[in-house]
Length: 514
Image 1 (cartoon, rainbow, N blue to C red):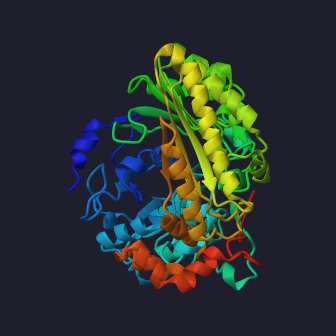
Image 2 (cartoon, rainbow, N blue to C red):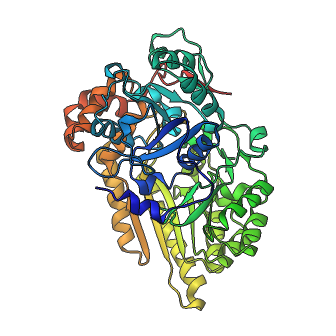
Image 3 (cartoon, helix red, strand yellow):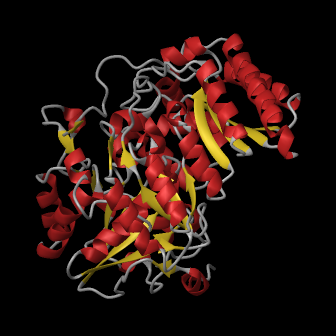
């Protein structure tokens, strides 16, 4: 049993969040508290609900094995009239179903009673392909909470029953309501995904920041601030660059003003975004945060955005780690990804990083890319060896030996990316490539490796592209069937979607961005 009272005692709310309102939203994250409270989007929804007149919000997570209860009042999930799940990772679909099971709420939406909660799903997975979960979720919120919550909360508070809420949201922009929308039958206008525009980011009040600081997260005791949305690049493998729209940023003044909220609760900051370093005033923001006495860290930075000024500011704040994403070891393959960044530029940035005194470098790579050869995979090791040589050379005068970590993922061709029609590479070939990298890293002291499970990649690839017909497979997973048995038992349905190139109409293309 989870000791929510103890966890509440360690939390430091940034604002005043009233525990009672005329209406209460159950805000659920289909994973642990540790992971859910690391999500800035989850914090943002919590804050926005409390800013809405007559509304309060209570958080639920997947921790424990009994009935899921809220952190705030330990109210059971089934007692809420509306439960909104934030889902950023497809693997959490199974956790969502298991949370419903533990709450004695029927999984399938058409089996629920009038007394059962209305189940909402938002987050990036809702905007990638909601069809996979459409037999279980009543309403999908497509886009930014700032744009969607007003309509959602108004519908729930003003309509008399769930049927009326569904009818109202089915004609509101930004919602997919499976009971009313059947895109697979054709003849339906595309549904609008309502992301925040550049103009909206320039308005006060639209800056997501941490709502509650806690030591029990991936970003322990940090106050997170969103820097921007979208990305200047259009890498063919990345959903964020296509699904989040053009690169736009929050005004520096809004970001700096938000730090006043952090002062009473923490001295640690985390600046997050798809392209943190591309904010036009990033150096000023970091330097001002240092001047105010904060320790700062950033999420991964695009390679071209690494500058002396950014590194100096990070080092001065006490940060010693930085993350870059070369994705491949060869220039030619990187160009095919629509990421024309040569190794010589990367190596210049790596030298700069270690010369500045940072000691921990994370490099993210992808294998299984279309057209990739074993020589391309070997190029990852060659590039890692060159980075290691620079690390040893630059850090030698300090007497410190740093570490380089290689995070190697497998290509999962996601909807709304340049590779959405591509197939996953054959598992036998992927095993050969992973083995090559593993053996090579053993010959590189102070270089570590993390790789992705092939079976997990197959599963993620399937559920990212599946339709309503995948509901029984998800239920088998929720019932406890292990992944190996799942992939074997349903291979006739999973493998064609994963290992065959998609042709013709793509079923998830019933949504459009503004």
